[in-house]
Length: 170
Image 1 (cartoon, rainbow, N blue to C red):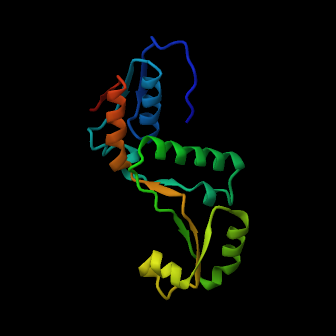
Image 2 (tube, one colour):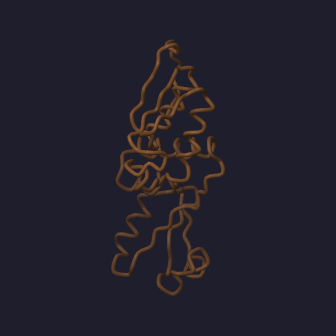
Image 3 (spheres, one colour):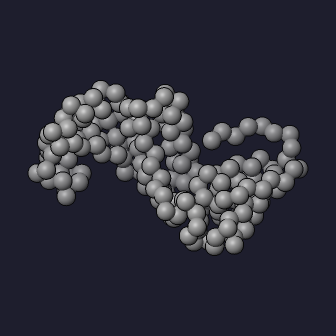
């Protein structure tokens, strides 16, 4: 998400949906000086929001295997944005493993992606003890991450309020 310079800071903005996408947009508009109201049909627990139920994978290197380059570029920018805005959000990386019968797919995936470290069986078991003895190697993408929307959305909503916006539930 990029901030752009606007000349209409006096124009009110209404955004429907207080999930991840709506909250980020509301925050950017509020910081640009707009009077922003973020509307959510459910309560603060967001039980009716897709973001309540969805995971927030930020895996631009893994996605590069089948995506256009722009997807990876936007994903890397998103990772930087999350780290800048909510540095306390944990990013523990992505791990790719495959059974022996899927070795050709695993090798193709490794050729088509970057940003990983190859882990042998011992390193893999150290990173994920429940996998000990089950796989001979893995690809670890240490800079990728997973955002838990239920944990970060209250923080984003608070930042919107601090920037002068409003968040309305129900």
